[in-house]
Image (cartoon, rainbow, N blue to C red; front, side, top):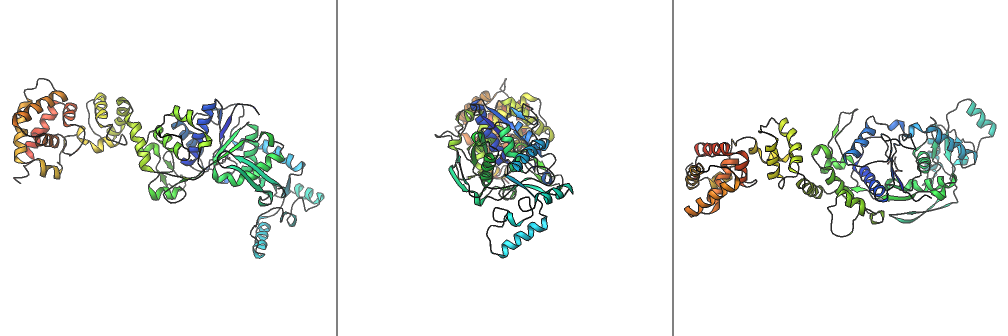
Amino acid sequence: MSEKIVLRYAPSPTGPQHIGGIRTALYCYYLAQQKGGELILRIEDTDQTRFVAGAEQFIVDSCNWLGIAFTQGVHVGGPNAPYRQSERTELYQKYAQQLLDQGHAYLAFDTPEELEAMRQRLEEAGADNRTYNYMTRMSMRNSLTLSAEEVQQRLTAGEPHVVRFKVPEKSEIRFHDIIRGHLHFHGSHVDDKVLLKSDGLPTYHLANVVDDHHMGVTHVIRGEEWLPSTPLHVLLYDALGWREEMPQFAHLALLLGPKGKLSKRAGDKYGIPVFPMDWQDKASGDTWKGYKEMGYLPEALMNYLSLLGWHPGGEQELLTREELIARFSLERCHHAGAKFDMAKLNSFQQHYLRQKPRETIAAALKPIVDAAGLPYPNEAYLAQVADLMRERITFVRDIPEQAPYFFRAPTTYNEKMTRKNWKTLNKELLTEFRGRLNELTQWSAPLVQDHFKTFLAEKEVGFGKLGAPLRLALTGLPSGPGAFDIAETIGRTEALARIDHALAELPASDQA
Ligand code: GLU
């Protein structure tokens, strides 16, 4: 086997990509980057009945958003093109024929009614296993039980048929899973799965094994829901003579919600979005929220998702893309499912948002305030607001929600604060201080603050006596960035106008 590692992310376009799939893609990406290997994006679209328009683009867009770079695949191209399985059917048919010729597979003509009758027979007989397998195959209508002439006649007549794998029932199936260790199955537990359907298209199993082999895949990283299929895949590698080059497997534990699997429904119930981006179901018109449109930064989601199922070792959990790439290892993946915790994701989000340059936050803020019709003088102003607010928010959209006073003078004043901090004495102090502010020839937070301190010292009163009414007049709210910083940002004229307005309009609470 060549030294170079080749990974693939192989989603089926049967709906929007779940974040569990995105985690798989991330792990593949880290490993490919770390080892200088290949990462292929292969679209497994052999089940035409479950095909959902737009799902492939959604996968591509989600991966782009998170910076998951593929070296080959749909939308990228590469030496193994095409990368959509629906465009590779001849290859699968060739191997189905090889399996038939070598006696590893057989043709089956059973109608849906006959298959149902078989299941009923088994049920009545009290059998646990009601599948098409080594025990039942000889009582069914297939090329193992029919004469060669009859098979030929049926084929000539164009009778619908499938190709089934003939599971060697006496086989011991052993393989090593990097996360789960050595695994052991018995052939008698594997059923004779369909490899090629009556429409000539392969099933997932055949296409997956053929493509992994043809694309030189060295490591299959996928969700644990595929673990039950792996014994069949191992048997297929054997039957096709590819066992020596069989990829290594790593089956990842499921992502969990507060109670069990993190399904779309569970996500809805517990307020945990399960899609990376917004998705609208064209048929039903239903929409689902995605992390991107909710305002999450890709680096926050990437970092958080990476820790759901993998432990970096050590205490440090906040890891940059480069650190994730350098440290990731399949050996440190857990086999128990990991619970999604929105509060923790939000703390990661806060961390990454804080680190953004003020201009970047301002650029994200602009369309939000524009859409809300909130006025501001220029973009430099938004950058200043971003700087003051970055420590206090989880999302950029929180800025106008938490601090509307940066865009409009307050029209209402927090009641509790008014009751407590807007008494006659406070108003008198603020009135006098307002007069003193006229003395300032320049306007900045430190200058206003110095003036404020001198005034307090002179009056021999504590900070809150004047600080709180000043904040109330400027913002109408009890908390936010420092009042002097707010005064500087909104500017002298606006600050003085707000103080004047509050003094004139808001009665002292002890007089009311
Ligand atoms: N097409 C499968 C899926 O949708 C891929 C499973 C695998 O990676 O083998 O998840």
